[in-house]
Image (cartoon, rainbow, N blue to C red):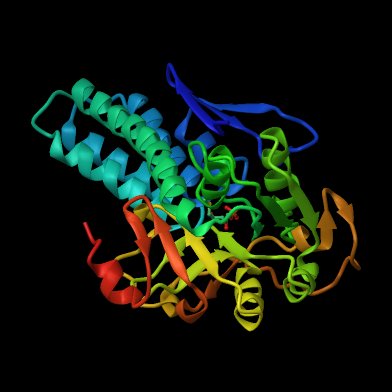
Length: 343
Ligand SMILES: CSC[C@@H](O)[C@@H](O)C(=O)COP(=O)(O)O
């Protein structure tokens, strides 16, 4: 299940704001439309945002008319900055934009048409690398999932949040495909309900047993012995292992620790921010208040109410049992083991 597909100058995205009641596609033929799609969460999830931005630059590059290479690069820089400004927390976005920008720079001796093609080729490569990485994450995580496990997950770190297969849901998919009898508990994930709308839908589509719960039920099911482990995705992992992920992940992690349940973060290396020492310096996106005051367009709070809506929180490394990557499982001490993987 791919949330994005590039073909002939257009990027087709599943509109994730409409799932699960409607499966419709949005087609972006300009980089501004791509930027809007990221900002408005038509496409979301750290790896998917990164690759979408890469295609956005490729689409933008095609429309640049100048024959001057320095003007071309100025335009590329502007496009990169617009895409960078769409969402602040997922580091995959910045990683992808930087990688595309460097690709353009490294082809400067070629013709403009060739540079444009090199940018598109790089975006296509990042797309397929992400799918490969997720499959490797799934395979690497298999040893942590025993038969008859019930796994709690938060938000959507599935195929929809990546180019296919998923990270946290990649491990779950791999365990299911390997014939393990597993059950998933999906937190609904207020305010934007990625768990209820996307994870529940995605797993149901694949025939993986899933039970939807409200966020405030997670502790109850952990304490009652129902949950064997927690697997979540990540938007940015600092060098010391502190992990930013969807708001509510921190609460889940503290509850898991209290109940002696392992919590695993599943993420590709593109989610590790090798320039950030700890979670304290990870920027946290504040989103619109209507995500809290409304559910699917229906008002549930007084009109004038003051609202706070941080979209992510940071889970300190002490609550994380391991980080599952495409290069293998990283165990504590995270700092040494993460630095060893630096590109
Ligand atoms: C593989 S996706 C990991 C994270 O990006 C995911 O858990 C998450 O927090 C997504 O947030 P979103 O605001 O929906 O983009």
